Amino acid sequence: MIKFTITFIFLLLLPLSVFADSPLTSTPISNAYEDKEIVMKAKTEGTMNKEIADYLHEKTNPLDIKAAVINVLGWDFNGKKNAEIYCGIIFGKQIMESDISLLSAHDNFVIGYLKALDDYFYPYKAVPFLRGAQKELNDSYTVSIILALARAQNADFCSSWKYVNKVFRNKSLDKDLRSDAEKIIYDYMVLYKNDCK
Image 1: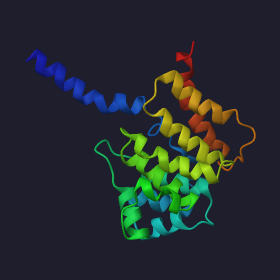
Image 2: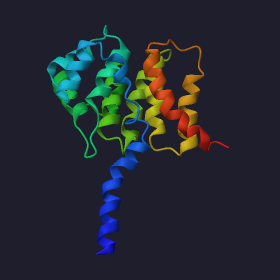
Image 3: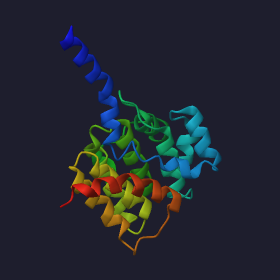
Image 4: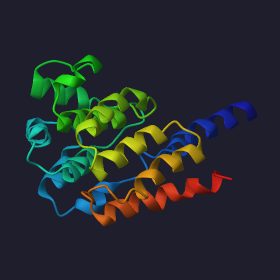
């Protein structure tokens, strides 16, 4: 009976511990964009649909708002399929890592961030897409910080801090992310700094 109780308590606490040490799921940057109609629609829907996909695919829409839309679509402990749905709506097929060079930087960013949140236990699947976006959008703070969060996800605490701090300190980047959103990321990630000796 005692063994069962301990196991049950551990299983109850597991999702909380994952959330507590998860750069991707503990940085709700969408909170800084609640004045944007598309962000609030995505929050209400909670999953990809054609309107959201079309917004994310449109190159003229700002990257930071796209990031907020993806962020508010969120994550689930059991995984989500927003990247799969997005690719089905926009491309009529699933997009593979071998397709990265054929995609626009915006689509690489969108697919990468969606993949990162869809399966945040395995963010390495998202990193190649985000790197593909950064190759063209190397001056974008938004792209750089989301890539840093994806890389930080499965790293040790000190390395996680170093990934994001490199972006925080890079003054040459175009600050295309609201300062309130940047603060949300910083306030969570600075907790990891203590593990760096």
